[in-house]
Image (cartoon, rainbow, N blue to C red; front, side, top):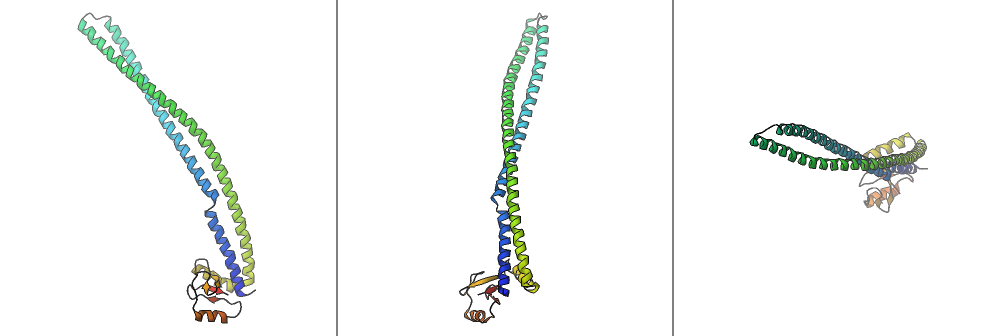
Length: 235
């Protein structure tokens, strides 16, 4: 094999390894896991919101019941006091105050019913979110496993390509490989390409007639240089 063959072999293998890297970032399993993560986060947030709503409703119900108990105690005291008064105006004042307590209790009872409805809704929402979270966590675990499998397959592919590369590099020789590595760094991963007619396969630009003559005159198997991009060219 010629120097050009070795360089093309290295380039082909390295391009395949680079493609594995690109494929890794674009795995459909990665997108599925991201969607599963979003779902888990969403349902956990729903549970937190439902718990807060339930706690708020429970706290308000307890406060209303405590206030109603205080009103009941006060009304009993006023009722007992009413039975002992004789003056009409004093009795009227006591009855008015008792009537206000009844109105306040009625309003509090209505609010308590609303709070109980809110509590029930929060508990229902919590139950639904719990069930949804269980499914989402299961889907998340499955997505993690699928991604791990897909990445393992890519790792095996890269390992195999690495073995092939090592074999080619040994045959090519350290000087050739070092030159190739320098070119890859300089030209974004593509160090060498075939010539397609008069066009560089890497930058897709045509070579001048003078450069074409130089390429044709080159020793068979020795790469030339693209006058446009500076990469190596092989006929």
